[in-house]
Length: 224
Image (tube, rainbow, N blue to C red; front, side):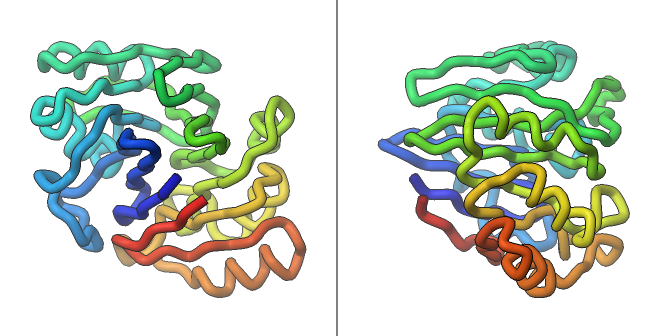
């Protein structure tokens, strides 16, 4: 399977003809290398409702016919736009022909562009024989270790930018807790408050033996 970093916290997962988008904030994203109109999707997954994650979800879903999976209240709001949704809540799993997606806890806040307030989440995605854990926007907390207790995490998408999420020092500890083979940093260098040193993060995680870190520039892909 291929994981393409779209910038900020947005990713595109592709395998066997299926395309899944995570937090597709493209329009207004200063580091994005694609336009929202260029993206296809069979499913769109949302960690939470902030505009820099919710992004182009509705426009892409309407154009492509993609199903949107989000926490219940956000799914309800998006469903009012005429979009097909799956409304999992914390711990809930949706099953697809191509795999599954489970919503997990994150420590953050979440308000949609329409003002809907919900808990934020992370996403445990099984696709192409791999387990991918997108931590969402989160502070460091010990329960980040729990998804890996159920099934080994192959690839973790971990925020490292600080200010609105954990910083890169806490993200080193997060890499240890999650226990993935590969970590891809995200949610950094999009805006000045979340600028950080990704290479230093890579060095610290790998020196500790916690994971291999793959730093992707927006538009670059990792094949698993």
